Image (tube, rainbow, N blue to C red):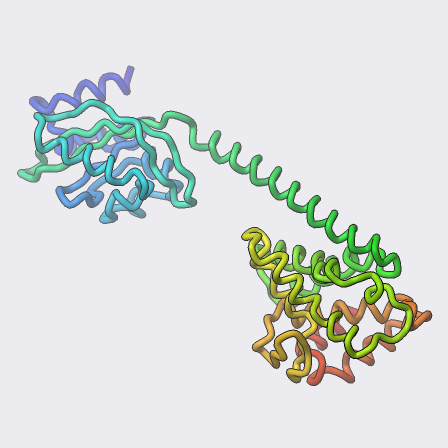
Length: 337
């Protein structure tokens, strides 16, 4: 009933012009409490006033966060012309035009279906646009559904990546469990080095797929128990390049590429495939180089039947800090034990 009375009053320009109405006692409160979004624009399309319902649709904290902004920034680019045409139509009509269903774009990029109901008003001699915005679906419903879809997609991707890593391990049973172990260790080290939580999924994906390029290496080389010839070793050193070629067109994995592509680079520039040195090597690749060697030395191999002790592996890493490994990464890694 209160909302109905407010709308009857505020919509009748002959009695209370909308903008003047907002300055009357009690109307500002009703303006902010009404469920429909309301935004008032100047002739340049800048926001003069808005209520809390409108700012909530945008995912903003208060109306002050958007005052002075161009309303067009909250309209998806592909339909902005339609919105502008709707506002311009007011120049050729008296008062209001028919409602139009379009979309708002919230601060987090989510598109919210809404119904725009624009009308020209006069406020203290200024010609303004009064825009009522009705949500056609609850914003939290959209966000919940998108969150569910995103989680489902993440789980599908994760299962696929683990399947790829497992397929490689099935070719070389000697390294069984290696990808899982180095992934867990790389994540721990990344957190110690100050990586933000938003980067951790990329560390996890890169670690899990660090040797995916070996899928392109023939069994006769990959599984050879004896020392590789020069030609065989040259081919083996191509596996980071093969990994890059395999993953570069997968947008989801692009941020993780530095590990599969760069984990055999050396601090002194004598690594492969690009002979990068020092901080030119991405930090994710530098930290993983330490983790990868740690795990390899800590477990038996055909060419080295006995696993090394913790102290011996740490000693090796520290001896090669500054040549093979980033010294700071080695120090942080050693402090974890």
